[in-house]
Amino acid sequence: MSPDPPTPASLDPQWFDTVVETHISTLLFAGDRVFKRKKPVRFPFVDFSTVERRRWACEREVQLNRRFSPDVYLGVVDLPDDDGHLEPVVVMRRMDPRRRLATLVAEHSPHAHSCLEALAKLMADFHRRAPRSPAISGDGSLSGIAAVWDESFEELRRAGPTLVDPDGVNEAQERAHKYLRGRQRLFDRRVSDERICDGHGDLQADDVFCTPEGPRVLDCLEFDDRLRHVDVLADVAFLAMDLERLGAPEAAGSFVTAWAEALGDPGVVHNTLMHHHVARYALVRGKVNCLRASQTTDPEVVAVAGARADALLDLALAHLRVGAVRLVLVGGLPGVGKTTLARALADVTGWPVLRSDAVRRQLAGFPPDVEPPPEVRERLYAPAAVAAVYAELRHRARELLRNGFSVILDASWTSLTEREAARALAVSCDADLMSIQCVCDPQVAHRRIRERVEKQTTGGSDATVEVAELLALRQEPWRGSLAVDTGAHAPSDLVAQVLEASGGGSVSGVVWDWSAPGLSSR
Image (cartoon, rainbow, N blue to C red; front, side, top):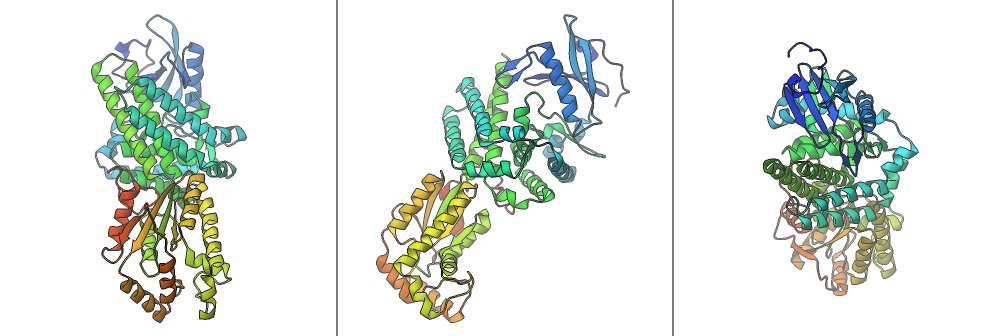
């Protein structure tokens, strides 16, 4: 790069070789330096309308960003503007654009992978020591997050249908609020577990540089502390969203997984909360593009901003659909293969499975993987015992649903009364209900039961052929369920069919399923 020049005499463009504009800032490049000034704008989420507010924001930007990149943020200087008035400007070290993470990802550079691994560790370390307080936690609570959602919806509607699809905005709002309504327990737990911190708040691939000395992270959100006080999961969700927007869902998935492992909390990626935060930030970036379009009459700029806003709305909807909390009933008579399907579905999605057979044994005082003796099995299927099993399944499922986990309930589900109770549970937890009825030739089912009994397989069903025949007599029609023939299709094919029907398997070709990090993409 060129030698470090003296500080420009003014903000006159003649002093600079490059000028870049965002919706709230102008960046002026000269030699080894970047001079960043705040635009005198006022939006619902930011007010730079006075020089005093802009000066405060500049000083705050330097202070906060030195937490990540102390050798990049050099200070604040005053430079005269076109009218001769002194304007506060942030002075930064100019970074090599070839080392920008977004560029490396677009070029499929191997350096992008190593940079993301280092960045995951850097962010995990930062999140462990980042400031926390009751006030910070309040901003990251459910009500705080709902307010951010609503601001985005309001701004998108203000932009009008020429920029974003109003039907998509309506669906996003409905899905986001449904998730929030049923997850008070989850958000309260994130607060009590001290997962809310003073974070970055705006982690984008354009603002990460992969230097030989390690990642340099720029441009944290300085103008509104409320928007920077976020769940640690949300902080990394922003970059995950941005990587996915750039067409790199696998990079997004590996980054989130590496961060969770570095933080010592790998199980967090199995929660639907990651999808929720990715969707929320996709809408935030969509709103920003709409604001950028409102600042110009250039049709090309407006068209680009509108296309980006619409694509980000699609991305938000994809994650809201995939990340919907689901109560999945996998049922059928003994021997039809419902447990095989439930386990296969769990392997692909990461959703926990609750099995009636395991619960039945626990309630009877036996370990889940130990079969009761024959003289005990008969009373385990008495009506009162069966009702107790289903009640316990619902109790355990309720805790998982409220904490943001989709859950699979593996039971016969032959009773309409029990299915209606499950439906009521889904409604009370604002979860989507999906009912899957496994069927096959009765002779095949009976053969499977006899083979299981002969092998004395531990952990299997306690049902005999006689129990299966009794349940068949009691079985009530299961209207509205998805019937799958386990005798005609492989489990993997059935899983694909179930996911397609659920709306969570093919909503987008680029959505990474955080709940199943072993998948490449979906």
